[in-house]
Length: 414
Image 1 (tube, one colour):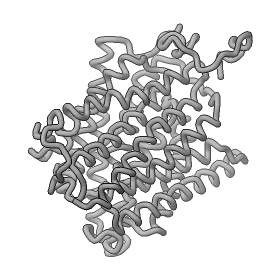
Image 2 (cartoon, one colour):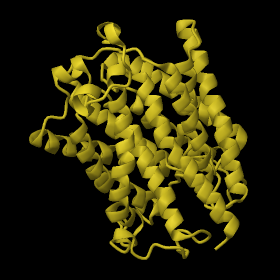
Image 3 (cartoon, one colour):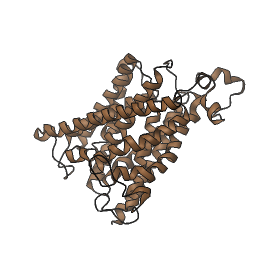
Image 4 (cartoon, one colour):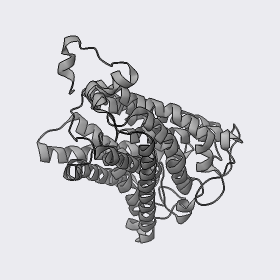
């Protein structure tokens, strides 16, 4: 065990923890004022529910030894998880710290997912859904990629969760949004408080440095490379988004800047410890362009109600980053990997990335649909007309974020 690596990962874990309350504020500012507490509660509830689910079943299913598809019950209830290292999974840091770091990843994935169904899915069905989701979607995919499963053995790379975190959460969010949105009127609601969104966005942005840098699990050259690449990616994503926004609308919006930052950060996540600085910028620019296109053109064309664009940012950005990892991966940056397509014509590197993405997307779509259908047979998922009109804060939680007095009636749509 190395103490400097342990302190490093401890600090990174705290940074990743900040991302979930940060994302709750980011989302909270984007919804109507009558639903802001419900939106924040979805992310905060994720912190509580994921903790219980992770320590009981999630961690052992993700990282327990066993077969190529799912982990065994070696670590159920955190058995054999303590201060000592695990030679296979955490050779430099306490195994319990590794477990906590990974739990933060699972938590933010659930929080991301909630953005697709904000204001439109009932709270209790959502909490039941995420318990099942962690066990049957997140944990198997994490095992495939990081826990000794078939995707890792295939040679596909995912440095910090482009596939495990962002594709699974974004795609699941889209499927839930479609299942709920088909029966509800689709209308564009203006953000009620972009300053709250800005504060949340800054916290998520800051936390991302721990998210990517900590995935080296040691304070070394790869950690530094991933840190620099993460800083670069935020710039590249925002730059490409704002350029497109100005070309199309002749405006430069704060929400556009924040959306571009997130798009760039998502895109670099699977590649952060594998690519050069210049290629990190290229990947983030591609991520910003792809996410802007999907949110502003594809979403408008097909009229699906991905409320806060969790799929448009995280699902799409994750796919772009995962595939481009195979294009730009560099042995000079990370000595544990081969060079990618641009260096040696290694088409196999791109092929395995593509296979991993396709399988994870298909698996996530199918299992999310099954979970959703089962829950629909047991209870209604969509909010009622009364909840839509009055607001989820008052009806579900018995609270209000704001008190407008006589202006309350005028504020129904903001």
